[in-house]
Length: 113
Image 1: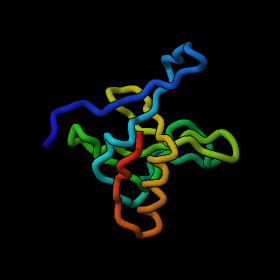
Image 2 (image 1 turned 90 degrees about the vertical axis):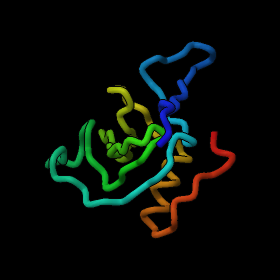
Image 3 (image 1 turned 120 degrees about the vertical axis):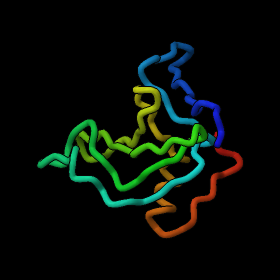
Image 4 (image 1 turned 60 degrees about the horizontal axis):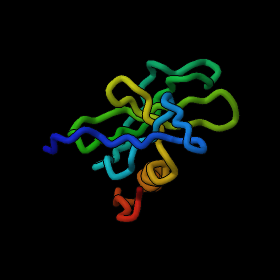
């Protein structure tokens, strides 16, 4: 089991770091699984900030984390908690979720940044 911490990449806006918004580095993902979606955390409206999804990621620190969604409109943003902080999933990581959902095996891309 690897002992390194999952890598987070800060999002920057023209040189001004937005310290509250971070993306998970896709290279930190070592496995993606689909499970039953837990009922706890679901809302009647389907909107909210901690909505559970059926996906679980294993990161390079060996820990598994439930992928959650923030949804306040017609689209959701996926994230995991790393060290108590939100780490958003970028398009590479969301592609991994789509692969699992469609039954393709998880294969990390070599050129993911």
